[in-house]
Image (tube, rainbow, N blue to C red; front, side, top):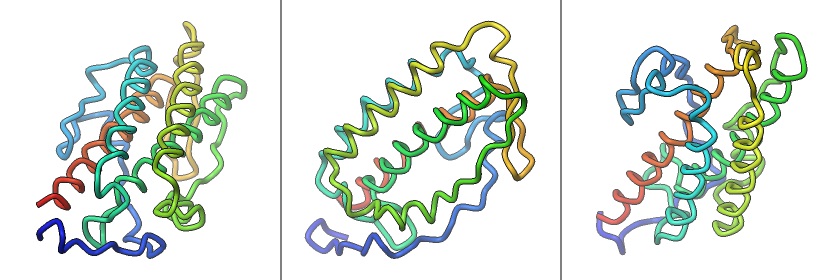
Length: 191
């Protein structure tokens, strides 16, 4: 499809909800993006979060950043909103793990949030700024984890259990993967 032929897909229209259990990335490299969480520790994650946040302003400044490449894929803007909210959510969950014994995280429906918060209609510049602030806050919280705190547990309602270390490694795959998703979407739109 040529650049001029691209039709903006209404961002308030939901896409098929994600049902894959991504915790597999703790045991093997992601086949889609190649990121291998086994090659890092939780202590590496603050720097990786900051590096990831630094990429998003450039992604969001590109033509097509607000356009879905097809009706089943978020726009780069929607991915950036999701990453921003993941950083915010994980900061809250990390604080729970640091202050409570084996907390059960409150549920979060990422697909409902995308619709309710109108991800596709948000301002890309503002989202880039908010993403950087959320990433910095999360990275700072991870920087504050010491010694035995890396072993503190937490869990999701679906039964997935984490330590702060596995939680950190699981987290970082998501924004790294979504940069690739966004870049692939932009490449599709630019054809």
